[in-house]
Structure formats: C-alpha cells, structure tokens
Image (cartoon, rainbow, N blue to C red; front, side):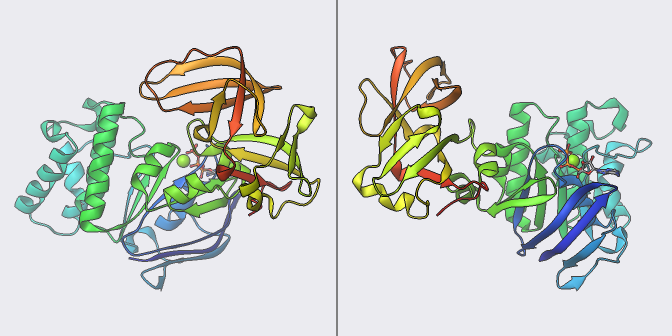
Length: 361
Ligand SMILES: Nc1ncnc2c1ncn2[C@@H]1O[C@H](COP(=O)(O)OP(=O)(O)OP(=O)(O)O)[C@@H](O)[C@H]1O
Ligand SMILES: [Mg+2]
C-alpha cells in the first residue's frame, strides 16, 4: 500500500520531535529511517501507527486519509523497540495472536506460526513464556508476531538491535526475503547504517526531527547532500576539510595554511559552483585518498597516526593539522609507511559543501 506523510509536525513541549516531515512511500517499498538517538524516528513510526496525535499534517495510507483513525483501524503491524509481548501467553499464542483476532482457525494459525518461527530460529521455544527467553529471542518473537499476519504496512523499530552479529545477519536476510516475497510496504527504524544500506530501497536520513536526505543507499553513500549526511554515512565517514577555493587559478588553500593544492585540469567542473574565495568544506571518502611517498600537485601532507588491518582492507589514519583523516586501502598486507606521508586526493570524487553545509553541485 502507498503511504504518504504530508507536512507532519509533532512537538513535546519545546522539543520538535518531528518537524515538517514529507515522505511518499510506494507500494511494496522498503524504507529505512536512519539517524542519531532522539532524532524522531520512533515518534514518526508512532504517528504512522496512530499511537501519537499530530500537531499538523496528514497521514494517508492507500489513498485514504487516516490521520484521525485509531490504530486498530489502520491494519498496520508494528514491532516496538521494547517488544511488548503478552507475558501470560505462550510464545505460540503470542505469535499467533494477530491471526486469532482475525478469526483464523487454530490449525491454520499453528502452521503459520511454526513456519515463521522456523525462519527466525525460535521454533524450539514455542511452548515457553516470554519471561523464559533472552532479550534477542523475545525480539525475534516480536518480529514473528508482526509478520505472521500480512498487514498493509509493517513498521519496525530497531527490531534486531539485541541480536548478536550472526543472528542479526540471518534475521536481516529473512526480513528482506519476506519483504521481497510478500511485497509489503515497510518502514524500518535503525541507527545501524549497514542495516539500512542492506535492507532499504530508500533511506531517509533524519536529524532533530527533520529529513536531511532521502535516496537509495548508493545515492546517499555516493552523493551526500550535506555535511551531516557526509559525516554520518560511511564507516569511517567522509573526510571533511575546511578550505577556500581560488577558482580563477584553480587553487585550493586549506585552513590554517596547512597546504595548497592545484586542481588537475580535468576536474574543473567540481568547483563550478564555488564562489571565488568562499569558505567551503571539501569532502572525500577514505577510499579516494591514496598514499604517496612524494608530494605532487594534488597531495596534502599527513603524519601517520595508526594503521588498522581489518582483514582484506587496511584503514590508515593520518594527521592533517589537528584533524585525523581516514584512508582506506584494499589489500591484505599491512603496508610499511614512513611517518611523513603524502595524501593524494582523487578529484573525480571530491565534493564541496557551502557555509550552510549544503552540497555545492
Ligand atoms: N512522550 C514524550 N514526551 C516528551 N518528549 C518525548 C516523548 N517522546 C519522545 N520525546 C522526545 O522527542 C524526541 C524524539 O524522540 P524519539 O523517541 O522519536 O527519538 P528516536 O529517534 O526514536 O531515538 P532513539 O534512537 O534513541 O530511539 C526526543 O528528544 C525525545 O526525548
Ligand atoms: Mg526510538
């Protein structure tokens, strides 16, 4: 089902939890809401579910304005951050509850519960009560309960946060597979960017109740629309360097006179929208910096700080003035590097952000 959030505002006292949120979700689309703690992710989900009233705006599901409808009339399945299982019921009855209230027969219920529980690796726990499960197991029960009945919209609030790395990957794969198979519109809250990248058709990056960028995982990774997204997405995130650009002479001067570099001939389009001598931020991902033994027109000086071998890729951290820059090298062997290194910036992959933090291209 399509889902539209139109100019949604919600404040708690002075806190603007959701501030002018606009989003149009296509039928069957998987959307991840990604952002730091307190940015309004849970509040946005609760608004969609009808658990929170709006100060302003509309919620439209399948073309119907549901802003005034109570939660039970919205046909939405939600996994809460704190699972909210029924303590007096067995796991079977917990998972089967949404089917029971819809009048599905016991035999049908039991087979559907068994199938989804098997997928989430909790099939052996069905006789227990929630208090007899670990946090991660309870979380999977909550996911199973949400997906056993195919609602119009799935809402997930950090549903895998309590699982260890391996279970998390498996549960993630199951959710993605399920969503592909049944094609239910889903909104998935996480502050794990790898999870958002892996699951979502589009990611909505939020900060302080506002949308910073909406796009496919690759769009957001490749072309962050502002310095907030640039510094939030990527592990480690994009390197951001203060500088001024002399567009006439194609020279970039870094803050505190740390370095001056000359733009290569073929990369002039990267500075097209930079005003002469405007203070800007240069952004470059760690994989687009190379380490050289000798300086050149496009290198800046760095002091080796630490080398981390992550297995298959090497992360080099170097000091540039007061700042630490990340450089990613795709190789297995830890390189031998001198203390003084030269960092070569690939200007095909450089972005400039203006004083307001917005991308200048
Ligand atoms: N019932 C409430 N009363 C007062 N303030 C609230 C209430 N619910 C949320 N807030 C505030 O609104 C803001 C957004 O909260 P929300 O729970 O939506 O954040 P979140 O993005 O889900 O964070 P987290 O990642 O920590 O779960 C926060 O500043 C929070 O303190
Ligand atoms: Mg939350």
